Length: 457
Ligand code: ARG
Image (cartoon, rainbow, N blue to C red; front, side, top):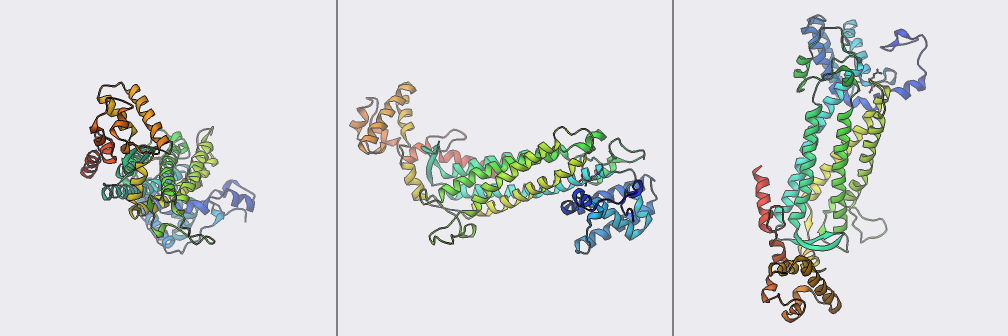
């Protein structure tokens, strides 16, 4: 037997067995089977409508494809490496099932535009489920914010106590990031939702196909405009991997904070036992495995983006076999972010806050020093001088082991005569937080306004 391959005609020697395995993609591209069939059915129907093949043949092909889909879903189909990829596995099975008429399916089409349409259909579906996961995480963050509006925590810069903030405000900061990720994902989805089928191998097809009809049938917003680009564009997959990398960067930051906050040193939160594990040697340990793993998985998602960019670098037009390597990084990024988002939405939802510990930490580190400076500014002192006054006040506090709100009026006035008894109204944690009322600030009323806005949109 020289060939039982769909492209065997030109060959006299059988493919080397290892080459066959090495070049095959069936092991990973089989996950595209439903999209391959969806695309083929639309193509076959169009061939019939355009009288490129007989309508009866098209109907037979479509019924055959439906049967194959059922068989695959019932676990009855064994894919083979000899048939290289999902496209040829399905086509060969079709011919086996309905006879020579199955060979008409590939009229006016190439695997190059076929794989391009399959990935787009697949990615579009995956994006829709990722969007749902993003929305769930957003809701968990908002619920945390709503449930804990009374909780004050230290806000940090350089991981040094900076100013007191509402814990709700901190949660809503992550909501902003997730909202931007969502908008990025929607943007890229809209950009690639165009039908590449009809590009053929690279130059288009000699048959009178109706691309617009197929695009409509498959839920695309239109058709791609250049056949060479249609079969060699993987920008959309790169954009997705880039979106996924930015998302994981955000999740890794949240992970890092959850890990710090659940340590004995911070002791700000309690993660549900369901998201932690114990140590095999230290009985006291409760390890925040889930955020640690998500932080770690960020690496592979960045790696996938690098793989994709490097894979596509300098490739001449149009299709090159290199491009078969686009699938595993894309699939891995999809799987990784879906898992991470799913687990994060639940973990955040079940997270318990240790309000007293957060508050105590916020009271340390002279977190209301800026409020004293702002007070002096309102009394007429230029900010730079006010900064100097408070700097000296803080040094005094460090030396005497006192906190700013504990200073007597005389002590305050030894640094600036502008300070009066009303200073005590400004240096409490509540006063400091609630003074920051402008949109985007941490004041309770600003955070409540933001929550109300989020609910209304
Ligand atoms: N398995 C191939 C891929 O994923 C399908 C396209 C093959 N085209 C070709 N001309 N060999 O890229």
